[in-house]
Length: 510
Image 1 (cartoon, helix red, strand yellow):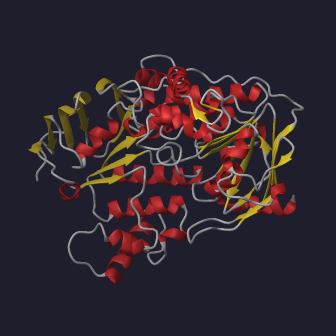
Image 2 (cartoon, one colour; image 1 turned 120 degrees about the horizontal axis):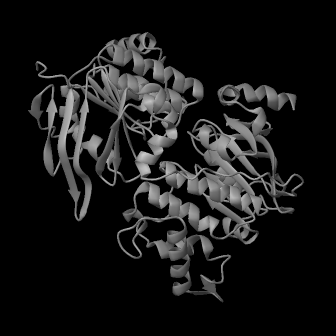
Image 3 (cartoon, helix red, strand yellow; image 1 turned 90 degrees about the vertical axis):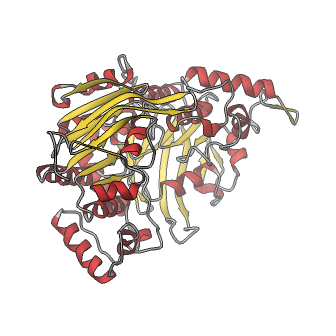
């Protein structure tokens, strides 16, 4: 198709309606060849809806798309790829038991020779500085390497437009820098990029232009290089973002959570073994554990929350050895736990929000369960309080958990545990997929809880978040953990090196 006009892609007056919700309301987006175009907005603003339509996974209710000046209909993702549109989703679509080459082959059209494809993968990945071993099994790869597979899979299809959804959320700083180089090179070769991210500093650094959505409508088209992160955030949310205030921590707080040489065998072929993890979390402080996903964070959370048991003395809560206690017993000791996976682990999808309150409060809250009897009014009151305090946006009074957007469900799940005012809080990825305004609210609540005398342990892949709230920072890699250093002594570069395994030296030297 020969180009007509200056734009590669035009989304013109797009409307998408789901029932009574207008997810996209007269949205127009235009992207030029060689342009890195940021697509910004709060959770639920309509970003994902629009890019799914561009990629053919959804169809618009009204409006039209133009590709190189010609009106098009994209009936499915295969048609999008044939046009030259590639997409790297935030959550990867890879089979862990297959090799790199086998995973890429599944997305290639027509017949193929696996040997020839493997040679092409090796050549393209090396050429773009995204090294991959075609015969490696995906289960053995880091999250950064898995993202390379998704990108190389797109590059092999020689895209004219590449859509990237939160691409740096799971990368070390060094891996993110390499990704930026790849995207700049692609843009230089004429490939357009639509870039979705909540990390506004990287948008300013990388992107040539930005379209901002709010409540399904376009509110601004700007040059991000001429904006500040604060001004971009203000456009996204329609007001100033709360700045997290971190009062001085209690200097001699007692140890409330203690891990003492905690070890845990891997419980599956793709699980991570925990090795001699030691850490004290004191009253009045926030300790953050940084690391790339898949390095033992989930296993560590399970061991602390009581979903998996260890020797009693490997975990001590307020002076009581608790490694062999279950989740309910640990909650009765004042513990609260927020898992990474909000839907299915943090909340039952088909249960109403009030019923999801019961799941984590039945063992420790007499307002919810009294003398063995469920107090439905009490559970409903707690639910409404959480909804109000954390601005959980919902379509009806007590919806099922699965009816909420990801960001709103995250606010509910975190708020449910914070509402208990626990003595010990452990939270895995507290602001995953949450917009800037909601993230600031959650982070402030974590800091405030700690300053009232609780011990707060945060597991996070977001370095901006960690530096914003943490008093001390440790790094987990391959099931081992570094010493927890004062945040003032840490840099993104040092954390990146520890993520890559340098912490093993510290561990042995400690």
